[in-house]
Length: 75
Length: 314
Image (cartoon, rainbow over all chains, first blue to last red; front, side):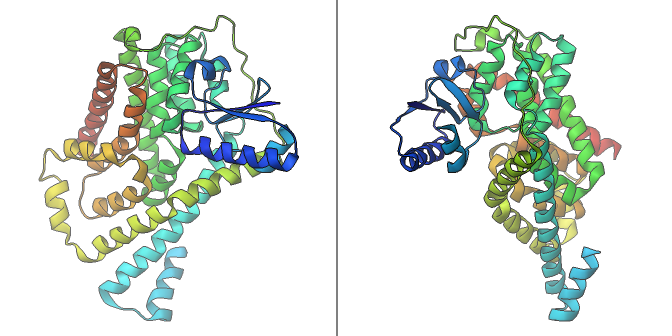
């Protein structure tokens, strides 16, 4: 599974990365977590409010930091 | 009712007297009132916005007429969230959907100016009349400002090459249950409140001190009719204060009650929210300095005009 965190380096993006890592740890699944700050790539996903969470190429949330439980539900 | 209750508490139960009691009462009354209003208004706005996100706004504005675009973008700016850290993807996203740069600017002017914190603070401190004037003229600046920027053919000042989306975007409202919406709204409200409640406390605290101790003619001399440049000075002072809107507004209210002209106060508050230095720095990555300068000049002069207009007619 590939998890991407889209954002241009705001504090909320780091918060989201932290929560995603915790959620992945909790789920016991194997996942590759990657931060994407390339604007062109962010635009390609059609995302306009960061941070956004993308799992296996599918946009799961935009413009907010979901709770760990919500991220677990996405995984 | 809350005014009498808190008055009773300070004067009769604690037993304070004189100027100190006045200042303490003002502080206590205002802080609790504003906290309460902030919580309710932010909750209400974020509840409504669980239906509408920026992706929806973009799809909705795609391919619309110029008039509809400017008015719509400004109105959507009231309800959708805006954080200067999202300014770039938002800007590029609009351009990508072939929404004209002028319409995009209408949105970029309106969204931070009509943010829920500013609206809640204004409502709590000045009442609904001043709040409606602020929103109404804020929309006017956003519509006209975006329109003028659009007419200046600034497209080449956008420094990034964006592939336009050819297809028609679909405008779908966000689907969630009412409970999920309420939960999301509450999370957001709590998050914002945590960030600003201390600024409110501080702002009201300094305001209470001014209220109790600084003589009225001192303030009137510098910010009232005696100073013809007060509006311009107020706008320039407002630019670096964006993040502290919650702390600055209580001060403005006290200054107004002590003789600062309402137009000057309005201009100042609009400058605080609409002209933000951090936002300009972020936008510099994708648009030229020239366009940022034009953006600030147009919005700035609009705000100054509103200030003088109000000082003359009120």
